[in-house]
Image (cartoon, rainbow, N blue to C red; front, top):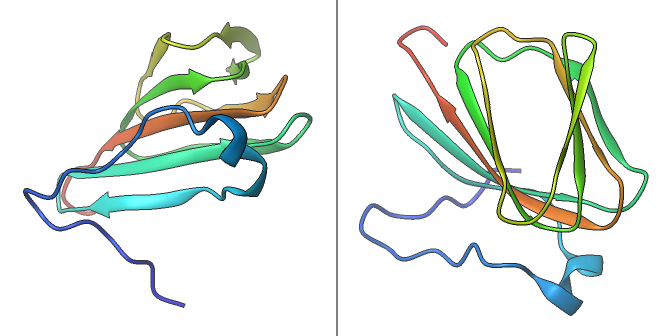
Length: 111
């Protein structure tokens, strides 16, 4: 199934989902040659297993709390907090409570 992506110049809502969080799903907002944006939705206890991404990453917590493990160390992100990760950092994300966030990946040619 192909994902629908936003069109350049089109506003995209990325505020907290509030009561809609329970029925929401993670979605790719767009992917260009140099940048990818993902609206991450994780319900309490759900996680993304440890993985690496070829580009630099930011994870901006919009609501709930996200625990991000990076190379064996954990950080908890609360709403309004953002975490920067170097490219190829081994990281995983776990929702400590129902949460959503904005993930930005800076891509390089060949990523």
